[in-house]
Image 1 (cartoon, rainbow, N blue to C red):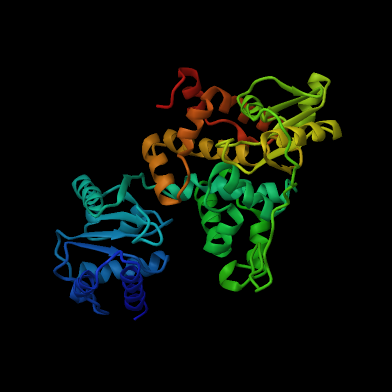
Image 2 (tube, rainbow, N blue to C red):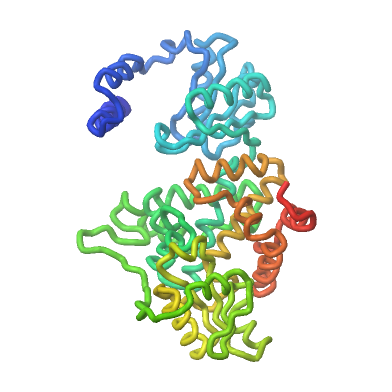
Length: 435
């Protein structure tokens, strides 16, 4: 009944917005049959299971389906985290089982991950890929590994956001704002976590972490785990990272800078890796080292800039400064560039660039592990979680050699192996292109 009501309301909304005629809406409704009896599915050539994320309950359903479906019928699971091979193990014909992982909301989101298990018939998987494309979906073939493509490769977006918050880089509202303004993400990690539900998000992180025997790139956030323990699950509980009362409206900590006449091209020069000096202060895009470390080497004040996807479009510049002189010069650059400023704590790789590089690092691991091709991973991330660009395309545009050097610097400064560049990234840097 809930499913039927959801579809009725969805069709009504599309009709009201002029996206669908009333006749088309009625036709859609007429094509849908509703049943609680598995025997009704006997004529089906493909059944897609999308029930509770519990392996035993899914297997019980598969047992019932095998009793009514023809031997030629394919059975797909919409699981986001359970191994397809394991779900199909012990079935009468494991060759007809596969994963078809849709992203929520399925009518809107383009991506479908097609996941063959170890025993899946290759022809069935290929037919499913073609079928999804015929439905207008962006379908990609993924290996049957924990998290598949997206739920594996997206972990650093949340993990790096939480780590920045835990380390005091800025408050949550400011960090969310920077991910949106500087990089073009639709939502920052905390507001997105509040929307998804921290219980769901943290469980996914823990599942991938455990499935990979504690591989460090997937380490879950302690702070997020504490939120879950406290019942602060996000919007659905009324409070998560943010509170959702009528008077709650978190604001980013942005310094309003009085604009002055100047050369806006100076900002372009600073982020292009050039040597920009203002009032005896070196201003540069972060190279992974803290501003204070670069200042100590150069024997001059240093202001480091976080990543800017489009310097002309952003409203702020995020800086970390070695001292007061560096802060004054940074604010002067912001004024001359017509921008406001955000002052971050001085940490390796700052916030947005560190996250983007770690996303590329994780995606590179996935290519190395043959989860999918680099193109398929980028396509999946843009269509499954609406990233503004693919992680590996970002690394290639940023420069593979530069990406590797920056990650090496972050790893050296933090002493944390999580930031060591993937060997796939190193190989790509050596040949100069992503392959």
